[in-house]
Image (cartoon, rainbow, N blue to C red):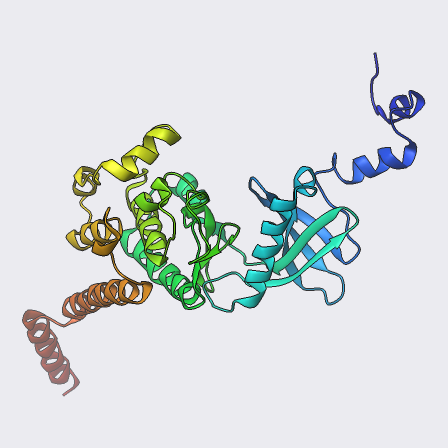
Length: 333
């Protein structure tokens, strides 16, 4: 039986040499890259394709996030092409509610790209830790992400994977959309690949694999995200196959929204964003952003007005103060 450090045993048996064993230790079994330019920090995220690490760029000391393609996928031409495409897209786009890509590179067998490191948590983690979100905060997320979608729309891009796990909440920037791994030119999607995405959030036309998608599919996914943020539950439950069928066939239930005493305006936004027929949805991110912002501004104005009324001195208070002032003047005489 081997105890303690198994390295000498593995080297003695010819399974690996000393250098390979030390590399295995430094890379934690190949899950952690060693790169010349970057000092790798904590693992901050992981998906099906890559792992994201906090890192420091040794050339200037800046903090970055490194997305590293998983080694087992690095030899897959399709996955590698999609990974590099995502990096180049992020580098080409510039919007406060989109994460910014910095550079893409390959060192040895490791393929990776650097992007800005934004302190904060993804909305999926916030849901898991804190439960459902305040209605107005969730609607501000919609305003921010709609701005990012508008920028993508202007570049003829469809994100195809809007969901809480792909939105980061930053104290400085608000909601920031990340992960463009499934993004495509709106006219590039064929019927064979439009179902890419996450089943609980994709639009009916995406679930059907109808062919070309446009920004209205992303608006549906943002609506499903809003539902999850404000109710704490998914719009449709079940296996992947069941959810795909429900996306196409079942209407959104308003029972949970009413049970949680959420506003009629929120219900309206959800119904319009998640309409089965794309023609019945908001037709673009700009209109969605405008309508939600108007509602939020009205809410703020109402609160400010109520606060001013609460702070205004009452008639009895003014009379009492006047009497106290007269009494004080008499004493001074």
